[in-house]
Length: 294
Image (cartoon, rainbow, N blue to C red):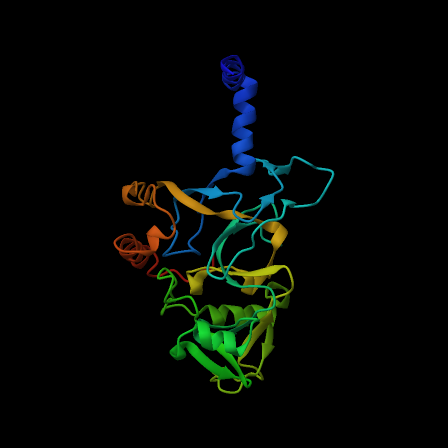
């Protein structure tokens, strides 16, 4: 036994062994990512460096870091082993359907079969595929509204996940409307007219609608009025999902100051005080005049 362990140790200490072990960890266990945009503020910030748990939703097809080349170039499959699927509210790392060479980080808003309404002032309504009785049993009465003779949930995750917020100085619905009217290919929802929802614009519709397809997941950023997400480029196939954030191993702000208090924290930790309070203060300071989508 001791002799076998010595052989394993010597092999792992060699260049070949080290490379194999490192690649195994990156491919199947944990991979480092950096948050490049502000779409997940106040939960995850620009400059957060995190390890992703690669096995949270099965095993995705391993890609060589930096060049993003599949280790099996003869196939277009992005999924190696199926596993668990995302739940509503999970923060998910995935390859967006319009560019599988990139990685995005968003929150899972809706599951296959769920329905989504997007209205003026960036109100998001969600109807779980389980129906009215499920909604009554799982959501507070003040969140439930009746639209089209069916029950919907208004802003369903904002109470549970405190990092979700809207920007009073920027209404993403106006951007969405402009893209629909002049660049229809850059939005993924269809216009509908819903009784009970106010109409701000002189148009034959007052909302946008989406029913999430089978084996597809609807992803939305916590920074609701500044997030480039499934509302624009569509839902995410299960095979595109890479994992979930594990913990922050390094974080630095736009002034090159290290955020020591965020290091070692999980996304769940960061939704609590004092981390969330500091994230809100930083956003209010840096994004006061920001009107973009990221």
